[in-house]
Image (tube, rainbow, N blue to C red):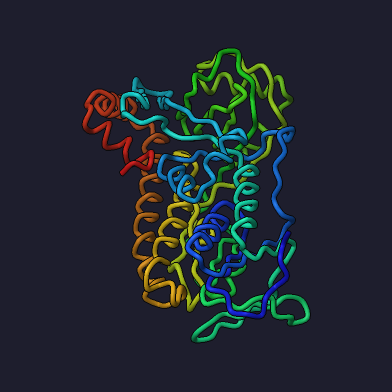
Length: 395
């Protein structure tokens, strides 16, 4: 049962019940802090009969974080699917690289998990942990003071006061805007087309990714044998793809993935989202801190967006241990959190942009050179292992 707003000062108030906000609220509550969460939408729910919708990949570090929060079993009971292989190749060169869990000595390279399952599991656990949950509640004004933040709703009614407020309200964060935090944006003028598809051959518990000119196609393995696809395309191409009927879409998709899984035999309805990289100039203002998409978004080519957000959540929760419990919103705590995360997130953005540009360029000899580089990485075990450890959250 959701609780009514309290006029007492909370230790932490999270705005946004996505995976990152839920993980921060639950992690803080697990430490015995007084925590509240505001969510403008209805409480997230998950039912077994629900169709697969938005899917994310969790790396090993993210799943270990969820295990520490006590939600891994509940996720695995709600169609989270471990995959053991990843195969990446280039349409214009001989390069191919394969990662294998057994080779790396780990139980899995990652998990595909539905956002709906993740958010519902976290909501249930927050409720059980005593987090004050306020669904369908939107803040209207925020007053920031030296020792607390007051958050008001309609009619200037006080919703909550907290020593630390966390903006986990997404890429278009209104709380970030309210705090006047500038954001650098890079519009890729591209869209990610998403769908759930059935393939002629099994997915082999492998994530498949192919670079084709200025397109990137990824197939993520699901528990029921189907695959969730993300097809990154320039905007006009994406519009044409979305206009195709099912048969034509399946045929085009089979071609772009090089028929690696045989024919595409069925597809769900398609959806798409714009690809825009964002990075906040700083991660906190006063006693308000940014986390997840409110702080940064990234090109989806490596599936790292949610993992970077969950790394934010883990870092912030860890910063709330010890003396920080007395004042979670202290400047020293939030500066340390920024040091923990901002440079790493900026590095990952630059790395993804570099990969994208390298694979989209077809100057004379470059595809062959690119292929040689990929083959070398695939064949030189120490380099390949180091790359894999970083990519899958083992570093």
